[in-house]
Image (cartoon, rainbow, N blue to C red; front, side, top):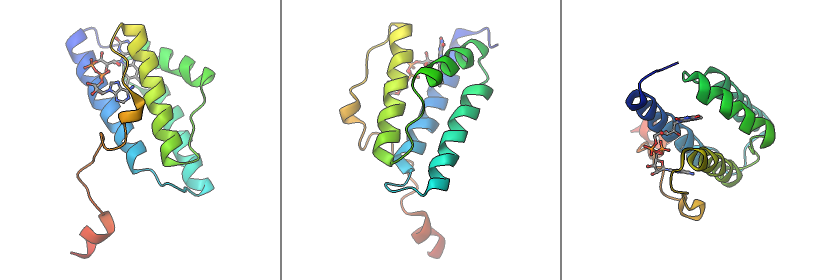
Length: 117
Ligand code: FAD
């Protein structure tokens, strides 16, 4: 467990950024294998998250609200919803999930095009 609140917050911001950006880049129409991969990733993320109390709490959230991985929009909406549950618990402002559309940009444009350039 990270005892220092500043480090815990920094870790949290970095982790949420990776999580939401992953959703923003997830396929609109994923294959079954891609959906399964995202689901596994989220359960492992919850299990291995380095802040022990956070991991424990997040696993409870996943039990109650299983990851939605059938499309980009459902995955992004799910991640926004569960982040809001953590916000609520911490007394933080609730994020308007309707605004999540272009909020998370990885800056990686089109990977395939970049590879050819
Ligand atoms: P963060 O909550 O880190 O959010 C970063 C930015 O994301 C915000 O500034 C905003 O722009 C955007 N954002 C906010 N809400 C949403 C949303 N719903 N959807 C999309 N984007 C949003 N800390 C604890 O003290 N106890 C815990 O139990 C705990 N559990 C955690 C579990 C997980 C899985 C993670 C990743 C983090 C957890 N944290 C926990 C850390 C905590 O959630 C915050 O990351 C930390 O407190 C820093 O908060 P922040 O105000 O900087 O914004």
